[in-house]
Length: 438
Image 1 (cartoon, rainbow, N blue to C red):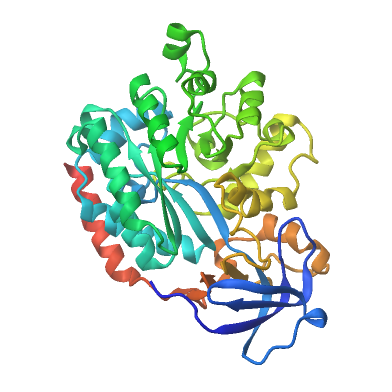
Image 2: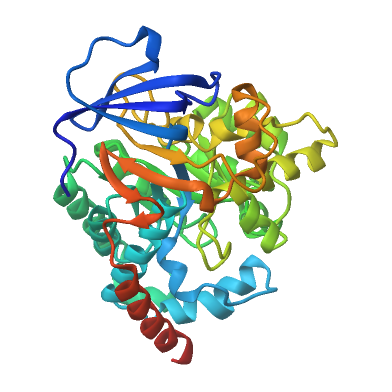
């Protein structure tokens, strides 16, 4: 994976440096060696002698997906109408038990290209065969935090013992250390699918080698019943007692939290991945996003896997997050467009412990997209001060024209430059049928 090495100035019709700032008309974005060297209004820009690229539309930070199982694209659309527990045990896990590494590599490659086309420049993955996920992400040119999965289930015994899985995670950390696009963490599946002793092993591993911990928490109303009956604790309280809630933990879903759970997340620095479309599809419930953010907890947006969302579409998730939050709070002003765009960019980056992405400010990695804001749905034009609202309510993957990651262009005029999608589609089709037919 090559990165940009020369200095380039992008002069944008409109530039969004960060979702908590106003849109700059006639903006300048200077990129040097894959990083932002300067951004702001053209009238204040420093002198520049290099290449200048003119971009119409809106240039903004790339979207940051904080919770995904992208290779589930192999099983997209299966298990429709089932709640999460039955969907996992009756449909997903038996079929995933037949996966081979090449299946994951091809599915991640196709899914990465789809995300790039949809304006997603960073994804946080939890899936089997983590090296295959990392290889495909690197090949496609998408930034990827690969949280190597840890699970104890008979369908996945071929991945070895807990010792084997932890050793594989440590080895993967070493292999990908220093890679410009790939970061490796650990993904213990959930408190209900792992023993206490295994979760304690994760705490020991992270104490010795700090890394992101990515875990499902309180997605379903009854998933913590056994833990509550045995310990008297909610799932977050149980994880906190073990020592697994820290500022390097991102908890996915978090629909069924008590007020004390929210205080616990705030105290420990735990972040949350909000997956509204997936939660809506499985009728998991409405997450307390307003209460979480009011407590100062970073909340990012996640697509979840394309088998439970169907689309790798952050625009869909952002709009759904607004609607669900307003319904839960019965307040039409809850969760503004600017706030939810922040949850898909800089707040998502904060949830991942990555201050270097999600903004287009000096020192940030040069991950950005150009949106076409002319066409059906964007008329009439009420000026740049309304652009964020219009992007949130009217934007779609089809608006994404060009994408850069680490200063390298990976999408041009709605075409992915890094993946032969026709070949990848054929491979995924063939492999998907094998998994479904058995």
